[in-house]
Length: 261
Image (cartoon, rainbow, N blue to C red; front, side, top):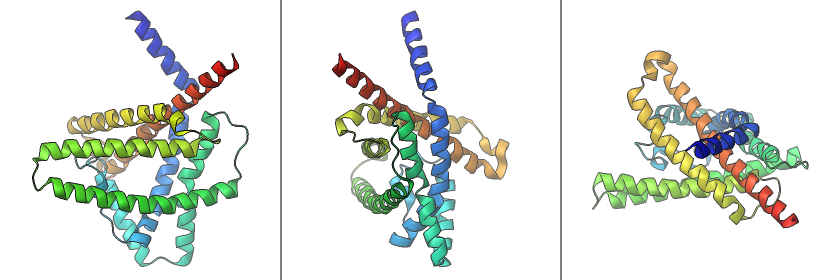
């Protein structure tokens, strides 16, 4: 028992020394800065998309009010947007991917940083690809849910959609890890950390949903409760991702050290 506690404390200190919470806070900030302009471009290219079709209702019920607000704001912005707003919003939407790579340079200990302009262009391309990927996943999720509802009870549908979300989250974590790494990372080298991130995401989302059933943030924060909830949700989701990224970096370091012996 004592050995297990010491091992847990040692692991916690390792991730703390790697500044996982600081990096997660940075990524959460730029994620929030990117999501509104991203939704504007999503609406601009694909029209109105029901974002909730991507998210299992019971898992993401806590953040759906804020997502719906941002979605409605994006639709309003598109109707009156000019070329300057469109171009600046594309630049703003790249902030998350840009700082994700910069964070990866810190985690993986790279001293050779990719040029800022080149990284911005790559991030802009990734934004466009992400938009069409979201459209595909939304269509697939909607179709799957529609088919299952015709012959399955609601409990089984929720379980299947949870598995679908877990698979989707796992592949998303892999892709984000591959992009964050400043040098060529093999998919096999990203699996362990991505799996850890996915497990932590699911545990956190289920725990957070359970917590909000008993907590009453509206009584404390009033009208801005949904914003506070989304801020907390974003931060802890980024913590889960950064922990997985650090795990990948640690495994790679150990692997290279063994090769040198």
